[in-house]
Amino acid sequence: MALSASAADHHPDRARAAVFISDVQYDSPGRDDRSNRSLNREWVEITNSTRRVVNLDGWTLEDEDGHSYTFDHFRLEGRATVRVHTGIGRDSRTDVFQDRRNYVWDNYSDTVTLRNDRDRFVDEVSWGHHRDDRGGDHHRHGGDHRGHRH
Image (cartoon, helix red, strand yellow):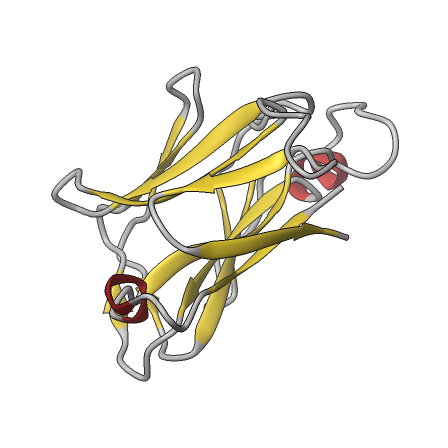
């Protein structure tokens, strides 16, 4: 399962939000055998909705258990998306790697939180906590984003 979300264009605060969590693949497809290939098929995507480059150096992604990934010297181009994989790999402009040997995002319920380099809340996506919400199991805090299932 994956979660996709896009910024709502009618809310003035979110229209100014440059960076948000745009997609999450929290349950790696296939068997969870902890192979590097499987680990890298678990990811979070961060999108820059503006035309300007955003310096993500020092920004963090964190789960509910306190596992954290910090962007290191990474600049996200305008109108671009970066995919943050759980496993080991070579960072590029479109893909970065946490270099972990175990899964981070819980398959059943978890929250991914994005904070900037001053530890200020930027965006958050949760799944599995409210299974009665419109038949889905994903929800988002901190903005007017619309989520749907793939």
